[in-house]
Image (cartoon, rainbow, N blue to C red; front, side, top):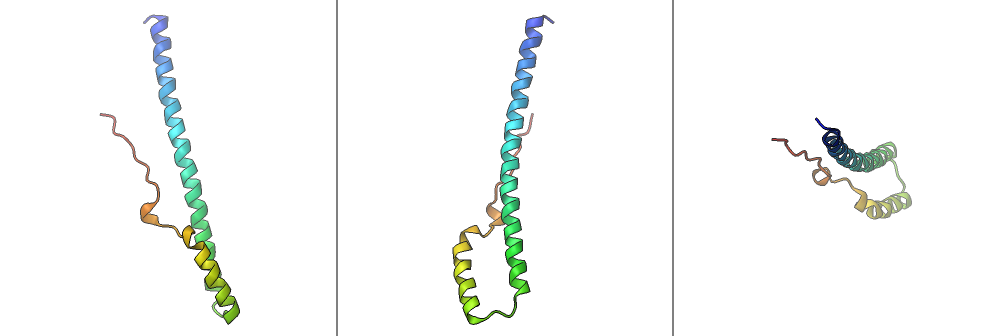
Length: 88
């Protein structure tokens, strides 16, 4: 093979690797976000479990803070999904 052809093939391979690295980086960022959300949900559930006896004032405060946090509830069915394209 000529040197130009080898260089061209190497550049093409480098571009493909770069694209794969970028997509993996994006997936990792999504996983980090979902992992943090999961940890927050676990902490909330553990804190609720640990404080079974709550006074009325604390219960009202907890209820209002729960309403504020409703946007943060993890919807496991709608989380991002990694899709891979088959190479046929």
